[in-house]
Length: 247
Image (cartoon, rainbow, N blue to C red; front, top):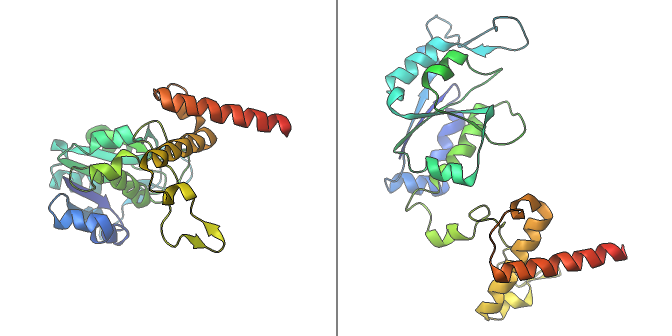
């Protein structure tokens, strides 16, 4: 996959591609990237990229001219273009998986009150919201989307590591532990030290169900869990119901 990122602040983006898993993906040829400072395409001598909104209102709006030129330079009309926006479609694991199959993705990093609508109308295929909140940096939102997407490209992360992650199915991930067995008086659950793989899997399933029921119960509403998971879920709900009755 090739990723183009159009930004006013390239230094905020560049480090992401030269560290950790992404750096390995780039080295392996699974991902290539191009960071475009679209301030270079501004027409005036001060390289001004924003202006006040027509109709009045607070804040500034990104001008169309520099972005039009930058997008045309990278042939964006032939690629899938993404704009991170609070007004966009909610990012999900399934959405990220769909995007991971694209050969080319272009990301526009917005700022201020947003970008001129004509940029969206002409170039943008996907407006994506990373959550029900607002942040000031389009770069941060863009990197969240990229991180969710590139790790799903074949070969970046092993299939076994992806299988039990949160949102791969209807359940959140189970708790993880590593050495030492005891630290600050807190011990690793005995079941994980038992070597009994079937019991460990049952314990992990129960913990996934407990966490999902506690933190994201809506994920369970129409989930197809299987006989064993449904049995355990009923036990958890019964135990919680009894506890709530005692409270």
